[in-house]
Length: 562
Image (cartoon, rainbow, N blue to C red; front, side, top):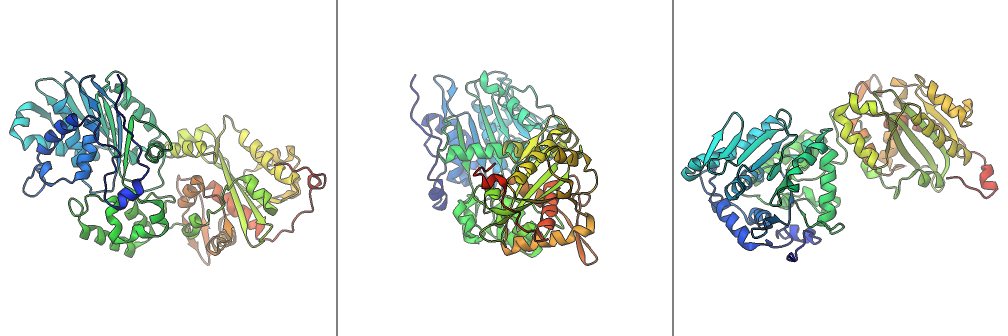
């Protein structure tokens, strides 16, 4: 049977979102199914809204477009749903809980399969309760639905008394979500799952029912994360943007993303209150304009951290660099200096007249960080930096809270997961040898404690002991920290704008000590800063103004090793 023509790509979304047009790129594939579902959906009662209206009395068209796309993708003649995955990314307070409750209750009402199971999966008990309450309220507010469904509050379960089908609201932190075979699954607050190391396995389980239930669906709902997107959330966001922008065709997946066009963020237009509607399609309805303006003013009066959180949650602006309390001053300028086009090691070396290297970390609980800083040939005041890190699998077990991030960085090429201790130091030594053979290496700076294995690996690669320097840590490193801050603020320290370093720099916490500044791993807690400490070591050496080494023998022979 030939399927109707449709697309889930929305390449003109930037124009659509500015002019308040629908972000659903195509009308319902099967309009009669969409109309049937919307008739049910619109009759559901909102018990917590003044006047106790029906959804159809107060809901805006964008909600109907999304709901119609979900149910309108189902062919009742074949029992097959053409689009089976949906993703709605939207700012807080835009009726997300109401939408999820209405969609899943509508699906339970229209379901034909006896003993079918539907699930709402929430990351926490609190979110699960917030998802269960609107469903329960919709049923209790309608006498006909009250007769049709049995509610179990302690298990957060709704049972269809004629067909035996159920809707269960599960909290992933306490309820068992493995092995579920749902006909329909809705996953709430995906950004929180992005912080879970085993969330990817759970998502695979949640989609398992689609294999045997062709009418099945999975819906992902989320706001933006309060820190840089990671794990399953980062993966889903990338997949959604690729499909939306037409870079990848996937007709089984429909993303609807309320976010600012990049151009508006670059121009600062996202912070103009008249543009808040871009990511708040319910502005003036469930979202109070006065509330948003008040929250924005409060955030500005607090600090940059509060403004970033406001932007992430209420404007859906992704956070690239997550600042914490007592954040390092250089972090404010970090991202704007990520201007190197490729940011690769080769790029740094090709454009440098002299190079210093910093190394830090390497314990079983740590990353082993490497920083390469080159003084630019064309403009010696300008320094270029490249970073890499290595991690032993034991870190993934000992620090499960950051495991998903480390896997992301490994995929992006900025971190290497080694199989055994020693591979990391061998890699670093090989990179240092490459720089040395090119005639660019001045010195290698290390934390003096626990460097035996690194020194051995460097010696094996022909790096002389005179080229390694112990860089004093603690308060003595304050000069290098200040130099790094000033170079970033002046626009003279450039890097490749890599996600790993955004995370690392955001982790750094500063402590004032007498007339100096202190950044330590202890102050930064379990979050990792080793590649940043390596950068400070390299900056310390470069600030000594090393002379450019004599031209390499490889250069004079016409051979360049990269």
